[in-house]
Amino acid sequence: MTTSTTVPVAAVTPSPREPGSRGARRPLTNLLGYVFSAPYLVFIAVVFAYPLGFAVYMSFHDYFFTAPGVSVERPFVGLANYTDALTDPAVRQSFVNVAVFLVINVPLTVALSLVLATLLDRVVHAKAFLRVSFYLPYLTSSVAVVGVWLFLFNGGGIVNRVLGPLAPDPTWLINEHLAMPSIALFVTWKQLGFYILLYLAALQNVARDLYEAAATDGASRWQSFVNVTIPSLRPATVLVLILSIITGANLFTEPYLLTGGGGPNGASRSPVLVMYQQGIEQGQPGYAAAIGVLLVIGTLVLSYLSNRFAGGDNT
Image 1 (tube, helix red, strand yellow):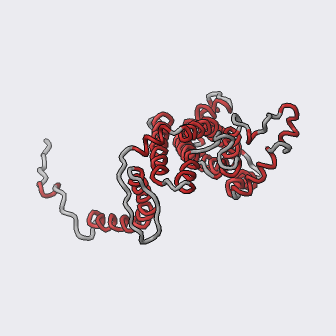
Image 2 (cartoon, helix red, strand yellow; image 1 turned 30 degrees about the horizontal axis):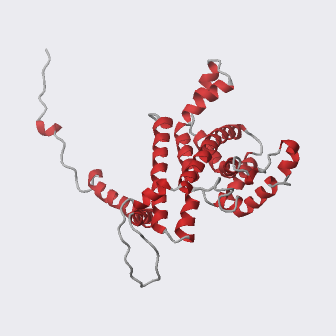
């Protein structure tokens, strides 16, 4: 015969947390988190949020710079700056140019950095030397590297000598059809080391058991790469996509130095270069700000689409 024992309600009712308990320390932990995050939040507000908000304000006004202490009227013009920007052939051409750049640069960056990172991850000897070698162009000053690039790709450069009769005429950087693709190849080569390191870091988190299981099932190295490596690196791929899109949207130094300010005939002029020419050289900062806002919107849209379609459910 079994007897049942009734447990008092007070025995199962959780008691209030004592002052020294874990729950009581949570507000203090949250406060410390806010304190340690505050410097970075201030940095974001000062360096990014305020300039972006001020640029939006400028884009709706006939804004121009004056000497300190001089107060002038800057009338509200509504969408006039945006209308002028969207109907300006030079601005539209600059957006087409950066689209050409992204079509070439982004796929090359993702494919080459992924393949090279996978190969470097398998290297046993001289691994550190190879990683530094790929990363070195990224650290080198753009001005110095541009000088080497001009030496290689000018009319009498080494590349044209090797190609001989196959060399384009006019040559690479003064050819309307090849100027922007040449710049895209240059930026891909220069930035590649950074993205390789991103993929190498992501490869360390891929479980080796997955490769062993694939090998047990008879998968080749190519099949393991396609079915294990690429899906496992999807978050890193999304990051590389977004960063390379942002890099292309901010393109300025390379066309400014390689083609002398966006030539020939504006074939390599980027939106940021047009902003510099309009806002600084021609004294129309409100108009330049409108171009910048349009560029930010386009970059955000492309970044969202990259995250949406490349990231899937893993990001």
